[in-house]
Image 1: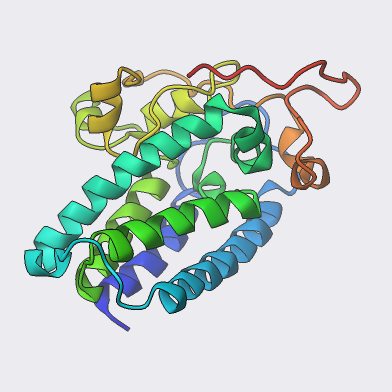
Image 2: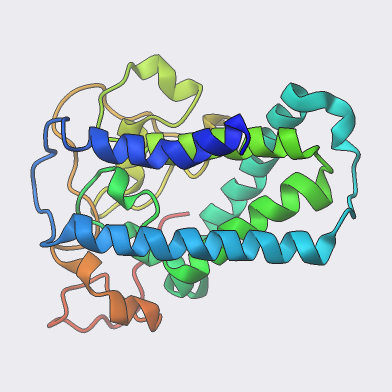
Length: 256
């Protein structure tokens, strides 16, 4: 197993361990949250491996560009940058269009607790979409070498987990990578918008950047207390944006 593969596998456990030592965010934490999240993470990990292998077998060595000529470092940098462009537009679309939102992404935003346990709290279809995007961008599109692709995946995994970590960071960092404070705005109750890319570059270019506060309490997350536990409804693509006793008349309106 290569070094970037080891780092990719180690990132999430490291941040999950950190969650036991950082101060709690306050507010509501769903009962059995960590246990439930661990099960969802395990399922999605298996899904991601399966989808990645299926795409690799189907596409083979086909590629549009010869990104292998960029070398390991250059290829990894190109992979992160280009993937984040497509990730930005998929992610923004998942907030904009009800069918994409209900088909998966609302489950990630249902979490009431802001921590690394929620980083991969995803609907299986959301995992399929994100993994497919990564698999197609790094290899069939860019034609990266296996080493460059592995390093790009390691960096992207770190960014996606780090932005969910409940740690305070300096404001200037928000112009380089998405900070936890910025991603807390993205998940904030009643907001669910802004900051769609792990690299702020694309949010800055397309007008959706919002650098979160440096200090102060973490904002309330999710839709309502208990939403993250409504897994059967979310798997069935039902809107859980309101408490179960209040039937929504239409899907949650998400700002573009």
